[in-house]
Length: 116
Image 1 (cartoon, rainbow, N blue to C red):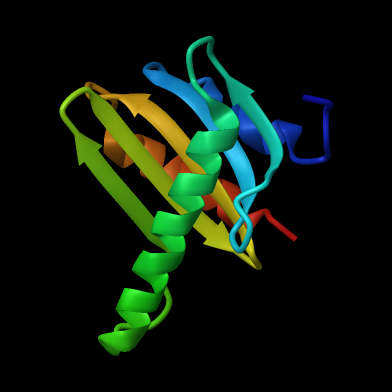
Image 2: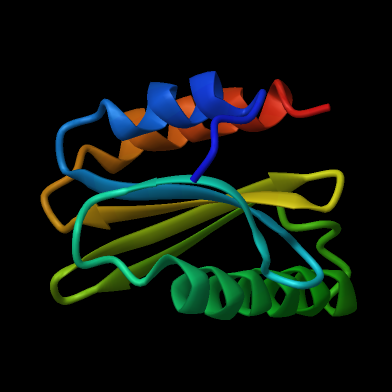
């Protein structure tokens, strides 16, 4: 994928041990704006599905009166998916199960704050 102004933000996340991919996608359509992925991660399909999950989590939180979702995490047997967004853009991170999720969450939320 061509380098965008978001490349430094993606690089700040992908450098963490255990991160296998990071994507910046449109929240509404799930289209990839920029990404850094290791071989074996199907970026387009993954981005669309995770953006949909993020939207649904946001709507669920709003319906429950909890406000807007700022961070979403899916813990699976073989890894984790983290998502955080702002202004209709969502960072999606694919990581191994052994990742230091606290450190990665801090880095992800810092990157989100730097979005326009």
